[in-house]
Length: 288
Image 1 (cartoon, rainbow, N blue to C red):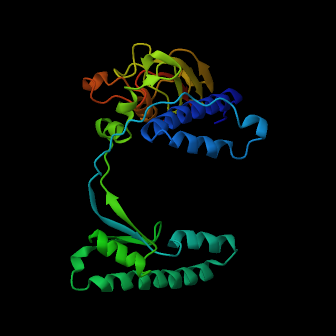
Image 2: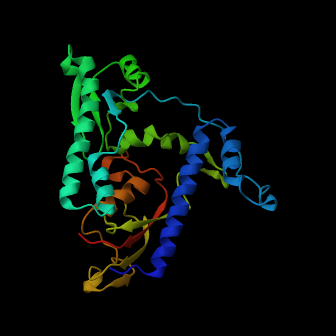
Image 3: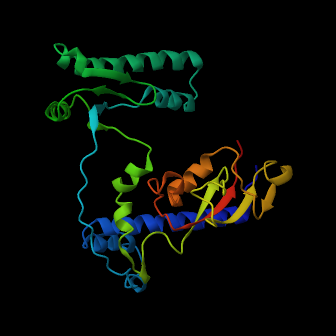
């Protein structure tokens, strides 16, 4: 699959648009003074003649405090790399297979001993100890109190202890969680006649394509379609442009487009995307 130069340009535009919308939302949620902090971060390393450029219009803060999401126990991390990363380092050093197997076995035993030191603290309550992880993550799950979590960290038995939050993929929960629905109520600093809902913005979705017939993405939501995909564009071509060129044959790109700008029509308005009034430029670079 060869990625063309126009695709790189579109990708840069997409990143710029998404960052612009995300940063705007972040600024609105925080207190007004956070704008000065963010501006300071971005301008700290600029030449003097560029530091005094006009800033974005000031937007009042929302001031809504969300309830903490539900969580089930804690995830603790231990010092030391997970086994697979340790093994990768050995391979990069040119160790033989026999050397790697021996060193990895010894290393994993050292991780197990550190895990056991924590488990010994709960010998009278073994139900507090959950799953253990070694290969891709060096840690375990514990069903303990926040006080016990802090004690493990202060005693340096673990390097970190984090709440194991319950997460869901439904837009009716994730959109309010990031305060997007509150941002929709704020005036657009560039056009006071409309609110910040993504109107006037086009988001490039570079993925498996976009199903422009989906109820959340039809009615002119998809304004441009392009395909740069080895043998998976229209009629088996490597490149195509125009209506139908970016039809999704897998579903992932359609999913992403709906999260970004879906109208929520299919769910009666309950599952709206983050920038629900934005348009979509569909760019297919992957097949099923």
